[in-house]
Length: 183
Image 1 (cartoon, one colour):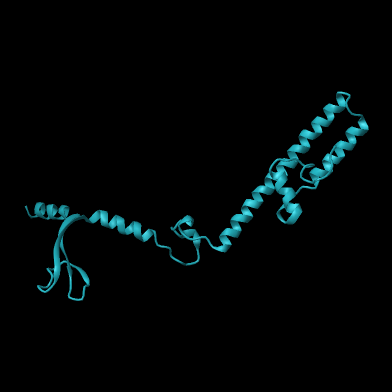
Image 2 (image 1 turned 180 degrees about the vertical axis):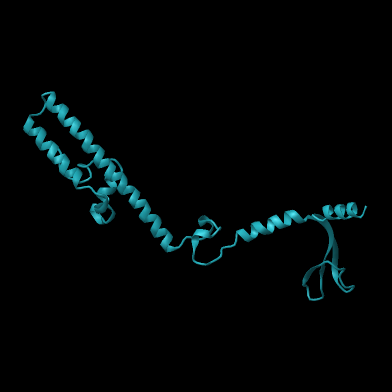
């Protein structure tokens, strides 16, 4: 019988209820206590709180996990990168990443234009629209323009050269973006 009573008592532990008292002292300080307020307390009220101990433990673990440990090792920090303010270094890194992406687009555009351009030039020659000499001249000019585009050059570009690469990343073509006369 004692075991049954102890088991029942243990099962009842996770859900508990207690009285909390909220009261204001003579200095205007608000207090919350588990014991009744002094008789001189003004605006005293009893608050009946029911709580689940297991839920509180879970909530406490979740709160603990949200705390950044500030050890300098960001790999194990739980705080999401979007929750913290961006630093100047973060913004610079984002700009560099975006520019790298634009450079990748520019290089792919140049490669694609070269491949398509060579096909068009060959078709023009086989169709009798241009001579073999003109085909070679246009193919060489297209190859030279295409070779002038590189990730390394793009990433380090500034001023007009950077604008040329941005133009190419916007799919406006080698010739239109200042990478040489192709035709």
